[in-house]
Image 1 (spheres, helix red, strand yellow):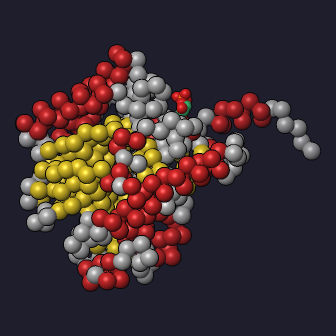
Image 2: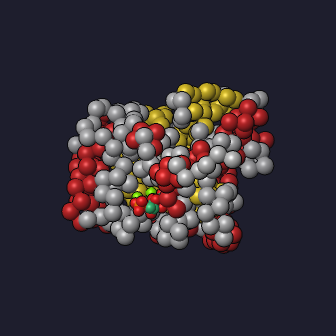
Image 3: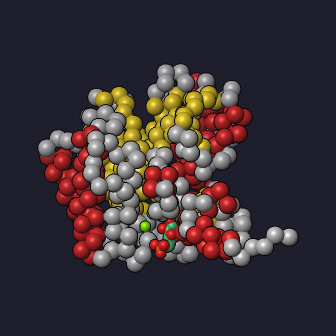
Length: 364
Ligand code: F6R
Ligand code: MG
Ligand code: MG
């Protein structure tokens, strides 16, 4: 069977500010998707939330960029947004940037990660969902998973992984993509993905057969709306095992709470903390940024699972370190490099403040 996995998310309103998704919204989404499942638009689904983002994890047979599936997600979010408005939730409908759906979610606000593949007899996947950060936050871990032999033992040991992976990288400012191959182009890859605000890994393919290995959402809301409308809390899908990185190789990069852009007002660098679904409730300085990983088996286009992967106590030390780093970073207050640099701040509300100051400067 050829199955498509679509992870589509949007922030359509928070309970107590930009904190969590109200359970009512998840109920509405579940009933919409249950209906779509019974009419076979989708084959299966799982609904969850990470921070203030509502997550629709769906399987179907319509391929990527399906107008039916994207339309379903759009209409579901619309219904949820109506409920969010009624409940007076904060930022109701905030990620729904356009009025009418026109066949595809691209450029409309919601984040999308999708992949279509021929199911293996047993096909494990990991769905990652982050809050209070941006799509480029996945650059470091995706690089480590598919290109760093110190992270992924399979790159050295397993012949299927040994020839490496192809990275499709998007320049989100100029809307261009480039394909680079690891290990040959490793230094070129790093030369661009080290700027995660601009260059974002979009997809990864296995080199031996060009099988899809990973897919990451690449929306930048501010570039659609032309102003700051919140960070584009990203999602990703990664395939695991039997010729792909092992589950533990996929999770290993997250044992280091590396710094990402986002956190308070989308304007600060902070540690990415891996947490269980239950702990995806960021409050400290609106954060620190969180990431949840759910493991599924895909069988006959059905989602078996999930397993809440970062609930493992082996990530306790990572969380402790993340809290320590959060303290350390916070003590810089409004100073860089805790606060992001000027290019990034251009997409926040800071320019409005700076404008008022302009006239007060005199030449020296
Ligand atoms: C970050 C985020 C929050 C808000 C902050 C201010 O992604 O969503 O940190 O930026 O709470 O929100 P407003 O401007 O809506 O009061
Ligand atoms: Mg929000
Ligand atoms: Mg969010």
